[in-house]
Image (cartoon, rainbow, N blue to C red; front, side, top):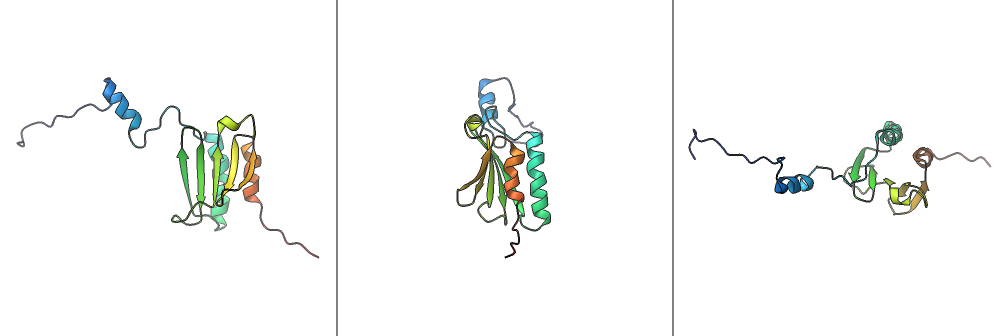
Length: 131
C-alpha cells in the first residue's frame, strides 16, 4: 500500500444486517434487554456510597447490567471481592421485592420493594450498649 492510496473503511453502524449484529455484540454496547439502574436509584445508592467513602469504609465500586439483573458492587479495595452487592431484579418485584443487599458471603441482608428502605441496612452502625 502506498502513501497516496486511500484506506478503505467499512461502516460499522451502517444499515446492513451484519453491521447491526456487530453493534449489538460490541463491547460496552448496552443491549436493549439489559436491566439497569435509573437516575433516581443511582442517586440513592451513590448517596450511601459517598457517606461510606467519607467515613473511610469503602473505596471502590462497580456497576454491571445484565439481562435479568443490575448490580452495584461495593469494595473495600479494588482487588478484593465485593463487600456488598446491591441488586435490582425486576422479575422478583411482585414476590419479594426488586431490590436486595447481598453480603460478601452470599447472605441476603435485606430485600424489599423500596430501594431507600433496603439501603438503610448499610447505614446502620454499631451502637454502644450500656449495662
